[in-house]
Image 1 (cartoon, helix red, strand yellow):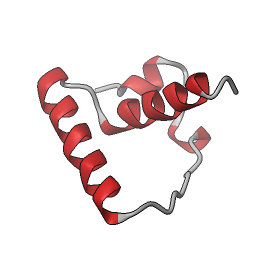
Image 2 (tube, rainbow, N blue to C red; image 1 turned 90 degrees about the horizontal axis):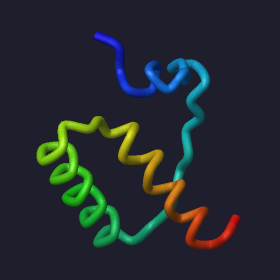
Image 3 (cartoon, one colour; image 1 turned 120 degrees about the vertical axis):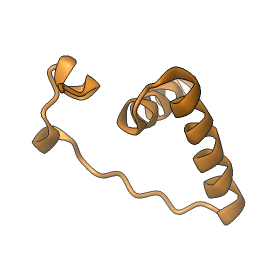
Image 4 (tube, rainbow, N blue to C red; image 1 turned 90 degrees about the vertical axis):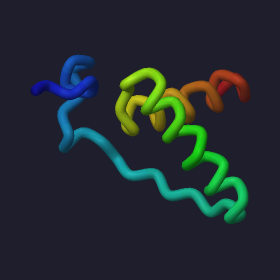
Length: 62
C-alpha cells in the first residue's frame, strides 16, 4: 500500500523532524484533534501534521 506522502512524491527519507516545545494541555489538545481527524477522515498522521504546519505558515504569511 502506498501512503499519501509517496503519492505526493515525498519519500520517507525526505521528511524532516520538527520538534516543538509546548505546554502539556496544548499537546493533549493536538493529540485529541489529530486522533478525531484521523478516525473521521481516514487521513494519516503525517498528512495532518503537514496541514497543521502549512496552515500556520499561511496564517503568519510566511
